[in-house]
Amino acid sequence: MILTHFNPELPVTLACDASPYGLGAVISYRYPNGSDRPIAFASRSLAPAEKNYSQIDKEALGIIWGIKKFHSYLYGRKFKLITDHQPLIYIFNSEKGVSVTASARLQRYSLFLSGYEYEIEFRGTAKHANADSLSRLPLKSTEVDTSLKMVESFHIAQMEAIPVSNKQVQQETRNDRVLGLITTFTQDGWNTIHKDGEYAPYYSRRNELTVHQGCLMWGVRVIIPSKLRSQVLGQIHEGHLGVVKMKALARSFVWWPGIDQDIEKLAKACNGCQQNQNSPKGAPLNAWEWPSKPWDRVHIDFAGPFLGSMFLIMVDAHSKWPEVIKMKNITSESTINVLRTIFSRNGIPSRIVSDNGPQFTSQEFENFMQLNGI
Image (cartoon, rainbow, N blue to C red; front, side, top):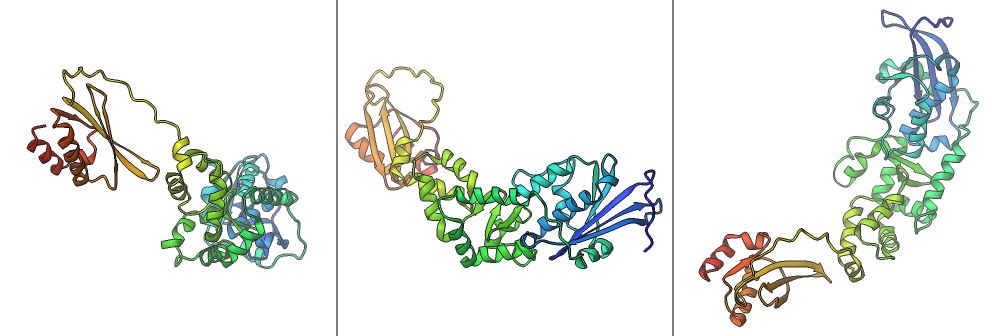
């Protein structure tokens, strides 16, 4: 194909691609009939560290390298950026901006691209043969990204911040049946077979997953293998911070499917967290008429879980006498059985005030109230 001279009056396109071992870029003119005429070709081999990138990172690197290579043609003018990697259309969309959960490398690339005026376009691989062939037949020379060490240092710092070593995470990730496959998919590309069931949480985040030193990461968070999760949870829980603060701490460094539920379950089962948790915000008070006699009006509600149990609390509005009963379960039937015991001792009240919880609004409970004239 014959190259043409650069003409600033014609619209410019830049097609970029990446293979497992090289990058390719073609800068061209686009004529009114839709045909492209190349101005220049470029390719290079990937450095050893770059070959370990996930496929999406390799494709993004190809775009960044292509723009840097043809900076003098592109800077200060609008151009069309062409890729055959569909996820990058959304990640590098100049109007939407990059997701906050994207990897640090993709966020850095997006920041670099913000200095250019471009419109990104998807082109199928069959029509992307020029850049694709260059990436598969690269020149032997490599031009390593000078900021590579800075990015790797950032991820190493993130891995060192978690309570297990990166070597432990690396080894257990390799031994973990699911994460071992996810690591391979992240580096070599996903298939549609492994997108449901236990793979679904990873598949939905596949465009934001990266691999660093054998550790799988979602954005800046290290994905913890199943064997190390209890150890990490123990370290997060060490200060009895409560559910909200433990979740915030975990989100700074680590992730795995269901981590929020695991933290909630741990906090609910911990006596220290229950005793140190903040009291709920007080509701506005509504004045009730003072009852003329004891046990005329009683207020009832459930409290808990506290120390692993629920409690039925009943307070007489006249005398402020409390009845607190530990409950094995909080069904309507269990509630009625407890109330029968209390009524046999204190008498039947005229009115019962509740928060209309499901136990107090069931048909069984309404029948009990009517039977006792309450």
